[in-house]
Length: 453
Image (cartoon, rainbow, N blue to C red):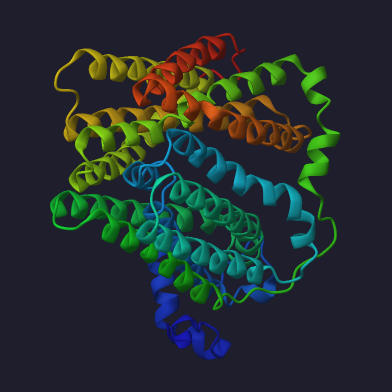
């Protein structure tokens, strides 16, 4: 990466007459007539904004693709099934991935806030992520059975904690280097490109079929993800972050503990937290669909490719629909998406139990597509509902309390995999489907908070 490519700080008089190529590209992407427009970032960062915009964009894009290559809800469950590890481990993957990201945000936010320059925390987190994934690749190639599964779980803990460091520091760095009116464009562009690359990966795996063995594939996926994190760290070094304020760094965990009284005093908030906890049944389901597809397809890599394609399509086609629906009623979005996931779980169990043969690779992709749509609705609906329900005075406390409760509940929910070892994967999907129906009924009893048209 040529650092001069990111250099957008020439002589100010000369730059007005002859903008750099980077400034021109920034103008094209953002629609700015002046790359120096700054709204809420330090004045010293104005001239570096084009450079920082593209450095952050590229680093974020690389990590998004890497996260998909090592997805805890898709790639890792397939790997665990192929290695012959217990279903309990599959149930732990998503909880550890999600809760592991949350924990450092709660525990180290105050310490990171005390650092005047925080990009190095992101870089350390990215490099630690690369090391964890590199060791996962080695484990996939050299171990099998329960030992391999638990080894991957241990490395996933390290990976999730490292991603948490990136998450908590990235928000500060972005806020200091890219103006408010440009952040949505940056994140949307990054997500769009990453989604296209994910679909391309799925298509490649589908075309690959039996052309490569599973052990080589997983070494390539996890090793490739590790390399992308190293490249992302190198790109992030190019960020020009001005030293920021170091006071006022509160500890989110302490804030959550202090605010726990909201669960006692605010009945509406308490009901929402209970509903959000019940909705974890939707979040916990994807790895078991993947494991079932892996078991039924005989580890055909083409089936994995179809699932990746389905996941990418679900996110791209459902978000706009759920978004418009949530502006009318976030409560009904939660109800509809949870009910959809519940009915899908019951249908999937019935297809496995009573049809011969069961779903094909294409059939599982269709099921996974619908599940992805339902999961996207649950995520969006509960986020919008909380924002609409809370006031400016209570929003931060409610988010902290809710995240803390859900982090603990998600780890406990990971034990659902015990049912898979005893009664089979399809039974776990049925159980989570019934729980999703119950969550939908509970969400239906929430009070409406969206403003009518």
